[in-house]
Image 1: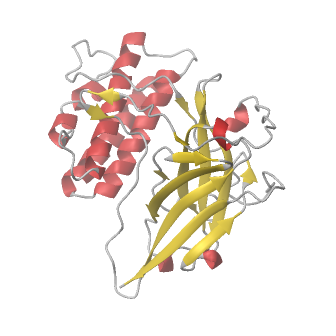
Image 2: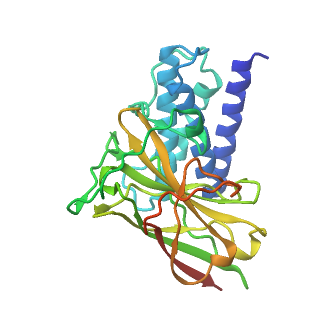
Length: 312
């Protein structure tokens, strides 16, 4: 079997896994699988390397990724008036199975995902490091960030995902983390800023589905405000020793055409306690193993969080 056929087979298996989770009502797992597959398709579509796929096939894959995102969004929005249904998504199975020979019109009026590179954690290491502009403060008058999310067929295309709180269990604790704000000297210059939240073990392996916040709500002086709750997707008592919760601050670089990590922070298990907490910011690339940490700045600028523990 050729490499391209192996890739297609892998995509189809991932698609089937996601729709199975979806049909069984395992929404967290379905969302995670859809996001993983969408990211893989986006990577293929946006690749500038020699490809086994034609430009038309790449366009089809891009539309397929959009539909995965739309279904993922529908699962998260319980009040959606115009949701993308599971039966709609299942109509696309023949496309992912036979992308090399598929020659019909795409069944839904959607557009491929925008040509904006979304880098996986650590991928920035392979890119030329952009010199950080040493702006005096980055201060500016309070204003909202522009809405750059494209509209597809009357629906908002959402790449970023937030997951619901897990069901409670006896003698088990769940953690909600409110991301309040982040302090940056050039806060006013960051475009489409958001946070990626993950839970890693000591080896840097994901323990939970990764979650992306919506774009920050506003900026004010040297702060970017999020005011968003993150539900950690595992009971605290079930997190292994040495686990940590990571917060990666990401923003869009229009000159380079991709979204990149600017800095990161993390919170270890002994820091989990109800109430506010302020944690330090570190330079990229994100060091999930916590071996080589470098502070982002000597200035008193931090990530501000608030923790709530839920016990049954």
